[in-house]
Length: 272
Image (tube, rainbow, N blue to C red):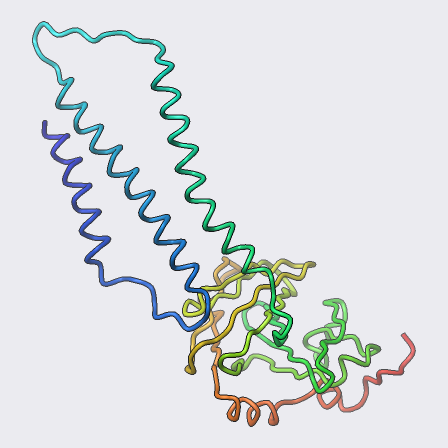
């Protein structure tokens, strides 16, 4: 009976902690409220299952507790119970997966009018690249990285000459404009995560990943690395500043292009 009481208290404590806890999500600052909804659906389903299972165990402890003269009944197989558990589990798993699949489909379908920003992760800092006046990012390769070319931009691609380079500084974005975030890592696994945007993605060496979002309010938001990437993992932080269109254009005009960074040494028409 004591164990049954403890189990009931665990259920009650878990429910109270969930509903009364002061630790909740940060206020959202992007269009991905769908992700919050998906998490809430998952909490409801897993919470209901957890409560039902623990209370059922408590009931069994009371209902079938040891009593003098009582003997356990041996039932090696129960097809009806197996069918109910199998169907119930399948329905529960499908109910958790379905909202996530819908949100994932939206997460990777980038709007045609989205601006493009490249995020480069490196132990242990964030750097960024934005398209120049041509609206296109040039080719890049980690094998081309040098002190003068920190992001490995190809000097033979004309589209890369006007690319805007932001090295180990804050990233600025305009409010209410969709952004496609292209992700690269030059060394190990990283993960670009801004809690207020509810959007994150792994950065895999040798591969390019992406996601998109629309900032919905101005402000300064901290960037975290959500993938253990070495001894400096906890210090791999930065900031995204969401500006009004006027402030964003003023900031953009102060940044350095790839051609300016290399001092004209990297010519687009140079022989490969």
